[in-house]
Length: 273
Image (cartoon, rainbow, N blue to C red; front, side):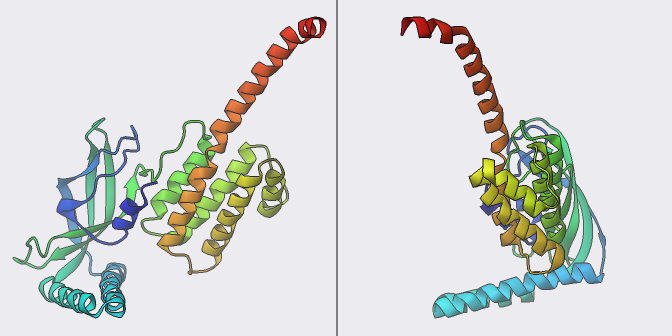
């Protein structure tokens, strides 16, 4: 998973320089925003205001952290933040636009919150910025192997999509993917804890990793303490776990082929060895 890419788009990004994303259709990292499809309506509501205030707080916290680390860097960050605040008066809005894959030409729609500069103030230093909150279809945050069952992949894609707007739902969907994964591998006990314990007897490494995702999912469902970094950590863990499906398939194939060889040659070897 290219973690830096997803960290980059957690906050608001200038519309004109939105990064290229992986395509949900062909898998190529060729999905780019079509600026000419961007359309918005002003939405001066509590949610859009909250997102803008959160963005300002992040910049202030970054300046404060830099000041604690290095006085000179902190002063520079503070000045940049003050200049940005003074020159970037913006109005909150809700937007819709499309992304197009340069490899397969398919389209993905996106909706979210935008910060629109007030009349006649848009410039390279004060651009329209956007935060995508929903992609349709969901954009994969890491490649999902074709051997991963649809029931698991579907939950993961929803976890990816909720990451951009609702971390609790993202964590809950990730937990659901763990439940489906265990079921697809033939493990089902009275609850997820015992199910993972049963799986861990046969797959010790994966079982240990799944326990961490279970804890994350429980926390997401019952509190507000899960942040973007926690979800990204969990996605990186799940990316490794999902490799179990192609490995199980290959091992089953190897066992079947080995049985055929034994059946064909074992008696001959007993008489000649």
